[in-house]
Image 1 (cartoon, one colour):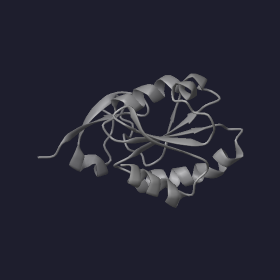
Image 2: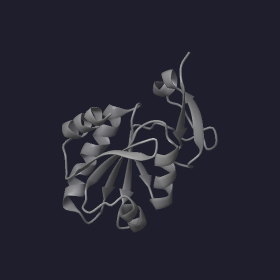
Image 3: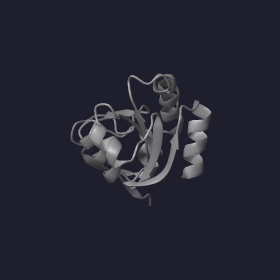
Image 4: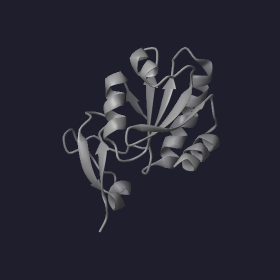
Length: 144
């Protein structure tokens, strides 16, 4: 029998129960019908970020970034590719620190880009600086 996981919808923040062996089958949210595991980073604001990381049984990697940051913009396509490579077992999200300063302060983000891996709402690992896709995926896999 497969374990049941709680997966938070990136669109409506609804918590969904999904069988672990069905993660790769393209599950959709029971409330809004959005894809639960779209294979791309979710764009989250401060309150949405807190709900997303707290309610997911899957690991969540958050890219704290800023639109005015050159290294952040350079890393964005690499982070998108990492989301495709790590799906469906790991969720990736972005949080714009200039729009969500409270979230950046709460998570002690001192510079951007900063990646933080959360497991069941708690920080498990952190790394700063722009990284290529191979380094992002290797860091996540090593931290799990």
